[in-house]
Image 1 (spheres, one colour):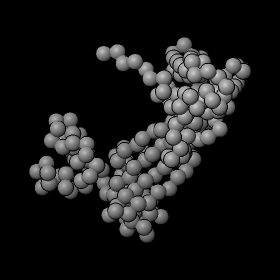
Image 2: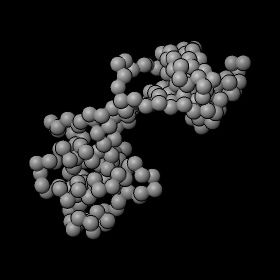
Image 3: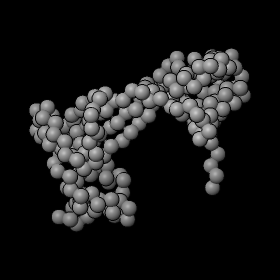
Length: 199
């Protein structure tokens, strides 16, 4: 099935890469009004700020709705094509370490780390001990996010030592439908193991 791309979603997607648009179209004044409007507010950072509609963009820029739609489609397609010789530049990095233990949360952020830990590796964070009561963790998952000119790397830490068998069994249970995503989110490891009959 061939899904049609939504112009509205293209506009929303472009809001996540406004700094990239500024770089890409710096030599093309035809897009200045639209890019200027898109960069006036940080729609992606403010949860209570609704995304702009094509009518709002049109009213603020003086461009017709049809022209705005064409420009959005052109920008979106030019950025996301193999023929594009322009490299997107995510030149800032933010790494977020997050640990949850016994309903308590500890987080720290950094913008530089020499070696990024991988899933399953053991990480000791001694300055988490006062808050969480533990300092030894393993990397449960890593998520990358690209927005603006920032690459964010989220590293979720779980207390204890990585158990390859348990993670294999959990992945198998998810893929066979023994447990669902909602259960994975709402239940802790002990409850999931009980449900799967491991103990």
